[in-house]
Length: 346
Ligand code: GLY
Image (cartoon, rainbow, N blue to C red):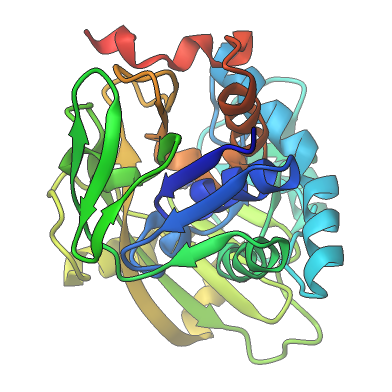
């Protein structure tokens, strides 16, 4: 029997799951409040399990698995849509102001062969050749188009008011009536507590972008990851991020937020000071107490969780999409998902 599945949330995680489920024959509808409000739109798009220094753990394995899936995943999506998602296996350089060690450590001279014009306080740094980036806003559009092309129904401006449930979810009460399905997936990121008492809360990040004067001869050709991160796009934009603030859903940018980002970025890579300021924005990472996502089973048999990706939602989209789709379709426990079970908080 074909299963009817409702996904709550139209960010990168909801879309990745929808595409996987639809490709395997399920009937999928996404209910989305506001496509541009989520962390997907606000992120920088780094695919950075090494630069983020995630310690050896099931989380690191999950992140590395997802980074490995990226090239083929993007290729499929681009073939389906004819659009470019801005994937770039550019590597990430992590400059440091204090000498350190390790197999990936480079001294200042070696670092400067990777990237010229680094700040004078930089004494060396790490080179993570396999870390990469994707243009998260372009990818969101590609995913949306791919989902639509495959026949996923996407409904926007839907406010979910509550679940109607006893031991199971019976329906979703929304501003546009009741929605029913065989199975439900919660992928609402930082807003997950509006529907379920799970510990996902917003961690605000302020961001900005500048534009290089000559987009043909790009001065930066890899991500720089230090006190700020500096993410050059192939079209000449450079994304600078990010603050990390526990201020609830307080929207907008502050003078100190932008000041901190700019001074950290200029110290790391002084040429930034001359580039044209293009945009400032902010967003809300879906954080959890242990900074790990909440994936798989929920207290309700027909509700699956896919939320709390914190700093790694863009990175974890391909592996979350395939693992959650498999779990929903087979209802078989996946060892990959064990470390991310909601019950660890009870
Ligand atoms: N992934 C980087 C950040 O969340 O700021």
